[in-house]
Image (cartoon, rainbow, N blue to C red; front, top):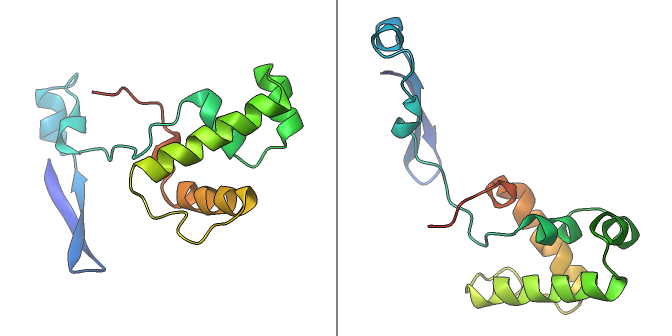
Amino acid sequence: MTIDRRLPLPDSKAATLFRLTRGDAQADPTGRMCGYMSAQQPAFYFTFPEQRPLLEVSDDEVAEELHLTQDAIKRTRRSIYERVDATGADLFNRAESGAERRRMLLRYIRQNLVELRPYERD
């Protein structure tokens, strides 16, 4: 594997683009090159049933899809907000209503899509 390019990022960091050479691929065709990269871990570890009420889907659709009541959806959202608060993240520092909290969390998730990936907790 060779370094193809380095791209400057804000805060004097750099992104590195690697290229797999033909020789590397032929030497170990079944090898996994993912060991060279480190994946960012999610901060909140949302499960699938927790992710659905967060996304921009109506409560009725989520309730029907997950076979839950409207109250269960609201309880799920409250528990998600409590977990986010418990981690020390300052996402909800100015939020007063549930709708504001939801918008702030959606904005965070759009900027950090790793939160929606399947994961295995260590």
